[in-house]
Image (cartoon, rainbow, N blue to C red; front, side, top):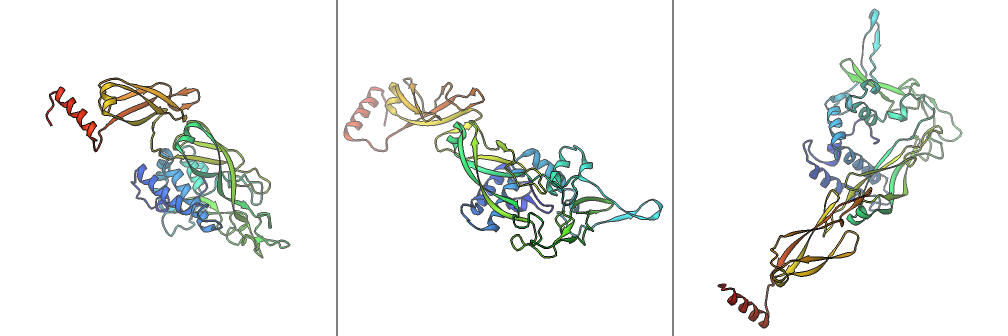
Length: 375
C-alpha cells in the first residue's frame, strides 16, 4: 500500500466510519467503475483517483488492516488527519532546545501499527535508512481487479491495466531539467526529512518540498514538472489461481514501482473481487444452485440435467413425491483448490403453469377427482 500522510480512506470512499463491509464494497465498486482507466483513457486525474480508491478499499475491506488504520487515526494530528500539525521542540538537557523525534520504527510490532505508519507516511522501505539520492527500493502497488465467478472457480489468465508512478526517464528521477544542477533543499536543509508532531511527540516524514531527496531543482524538468515521477498505464498479464475468492491476493515480485538510484522495484499486489453469478452461489468450496421442475416431475419422479461450475452437466435423480425446496447434494462438483474439492447443492423449485390448455385442464381435474381434492 502506498499512500500519503493525509489520506482519509473513509472520506475517499464516501462512507461513515462505522460502515459495514457491504457498504464499503458498494461504495468501492461504484467509484472504481467511475474512475477506471478503461473508462477514462489519458485522464491522469481519474487514474490517480482510481488508485486512491483502490488503496482505500484494500485497507477498509481487510478487518486487520482496518483495525490498525482506525487505531492510527486516533492519534489525531500526528497522523495528518487534524489541522495545524507543526514541528515541535522542547528544552533538552542543559536548557537547550532539542527537537523531539519519533521514528515509525520505534513502534515496533504493536499490532502491526508500526508498519501501518510506515505505509501511511510512505516512509517504509522507500525512505527508511536511506540517504538522499541513494539506492531506494520501489514502492509496492496494490490493485483490485474484478473477475467472473467461473474464472475464479476454474482459474486462468487475464491482462490488467495498472496505473503506476514511474521514475521520469528524462531527468532520471532528479526532477531537474537536463544539464542543470539541483540545490540543497531550504526546507529540510538537505536532510530529506522533517519532523511533525504535537505535545512532545513527533514523527519523521519525507520533506514535502524535496520529496525526501534533500535537493530541489534550480530548473524543473519539463516532462515531470520537477517531481521526478510520471504516471503510466502498465499492462500486466496475471494468473488467476483456481478457487480464489473475494479478498484473495497474489503478489507479483518486481512489478511495482521502479526503485530510485538503481534500487530494486517494488511488488504488485493484486486483490481479487469475485463478481456474483446468476446461477451459482458459493460457501467456501461448496456451491449452491436452484433448478425448476414441473408438478409431474415432482410427483412422479424424473431425471434432470444440472450445470456444474466446470461448465459440464450431470444427471440428478429427483425421486417421486419431491417437495418444492428439497435440497440435493452432488458430491465432488464444487470448487477445487489445492487438491480439495467441495460439493454442489441443488435446490428444486416446483413451477406451477400460469395457464392450462384444454387437455391439461382435463387431466388435472381427473387427478383432483381421484385425490378427492376440492377446487
